[in-house]
Length: 326
Image 1: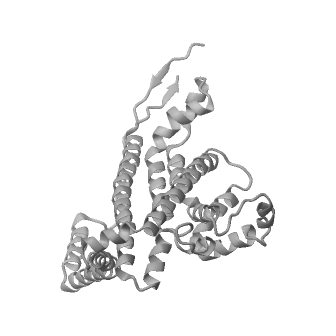
Image 2 (image 1 turned 180 degrees about the vertical axis):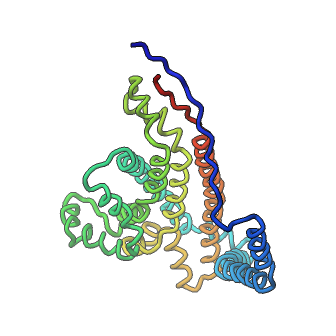
Image 3 (image 1 turned 120 degrees about the horizontal axis):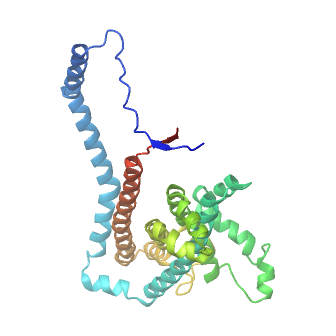
């Protein structure tokens, strides 16, 4: 028997009757009462108080310290400022911080992409435990992280003695600083990329696989363009956190000037030696990097949110017309 398909339009929404006793006249007073409540002097004073409290807290705890850093850095003049940041020890700290940051960003980017792909595309036993394990550095004090690294990679640690025999020194050297910073910044890229991967879904990857694309082609041509903004956002967060890490690096570095002293440690050393102008001058470099990172992060976060909102709008505008057989 031949069957013909006929597309039926969606049924109009069914009118729902209001509850008993509900009329437009009865709803009008409640709206007027709500408007009067919002415009009452008590409500206006409460709103004004909350706004002023928020502005005061932000000014005291955020804006004022930033102003003090730059004011103290330039208080003795431009010449003293340039002399402080061009000091050989300061330049060595800058080079060390940039080297550590570059390696940590590369390590965490590679790990973040792999872990985010695995956690968002597959469901397996122990997945939740792995997610919690990745988030572990966010709940542990950086000082405790440094002590754990000394326990494992120190001269008398579990692996330190073996590495010393091979001539590899981890603690109080460059590898220890990289390990401490990479551990602290481990979850940043994973969390940003994983969230967007789960939001985007895997339909396009499955379509590309059906068309014959291999894994690398799927990742480079399909997945990477969708997650590029989240990836850059995670890289920015990782960069800022790596440059400003103090606690874990302070424990494993040994404070050897010119060799294992990063910018935050160098600021602390200068301040403890009562070289306040030089300390604030070097601190202004970190503050400037933080402000630039914040601006870039805000711009990219706005682009990510706009992309997600555009995708949700497209999904909400899709209309399906079910076909039935007759």
